Amino acid sequence: MISKKVSIVILIFFRGSVVVSAAWRAIKIKVFGNASIFGLSTFGFALAMLGFWLLLRNQLIGALIFALLVAAIGETVAGLYEIVRGQTYVASVLTTFGIWLVGCYLLLTVAIGIHLVTDQSIGLFILLLHIPVAYLAVPAFVSRRIPLVAAFVFLFILLMLAGLGSYFAINVLNKVAIVFAFLSAISVWFVAFEALEEANRPS
Image (cartoon, rainbow, N blue to C red; front, side, top):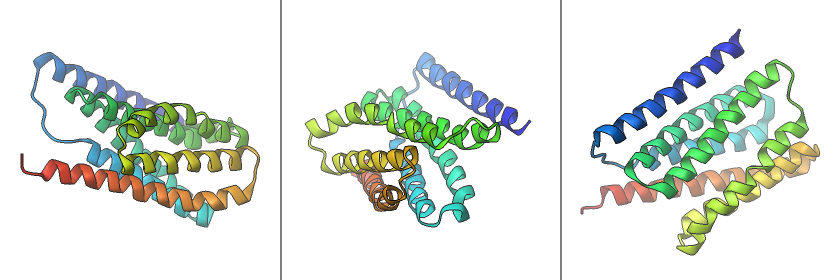
């Protein structure tokens, strides 16, 4: 029953987001502001919580699951907003991570509840994200945006360590992943701070 309710809430959220996005485009509202700030801020929050969970494990599992949900909503909404603004690259990064986080949240709640989850399924779910991360990082490298490049590099390493650690049950990899979870959080927050500074800069 809980799984069904969660699925309905997620479905309503996505349908509502699509409708709002389409409505904005149809009536040609001029949109102001940079939504990537709160999208990146919530993502950094989830990464930091992941670091603490890897450190303390079961004591923080509830906090981790809801941090993933917060980041999933924040990044997805921010990504849809950036699509409306015509910021294709930023929107692609935010929505890719946001929707993946929705899947991760459902995997750790609904799927576990109906006994569909193994360490291998979680590991592969994490490892396959390397593909979009790799090509989404290319524009950042080409434009030499160092803070964003650092965020992608730390995320790539974190995903590799956490994915392989889960798939092969190698605890030492999860221990090393703690460092990169915090480095990823700091670098993502720094990118968000840069966006905030740019938004407040006099035109």
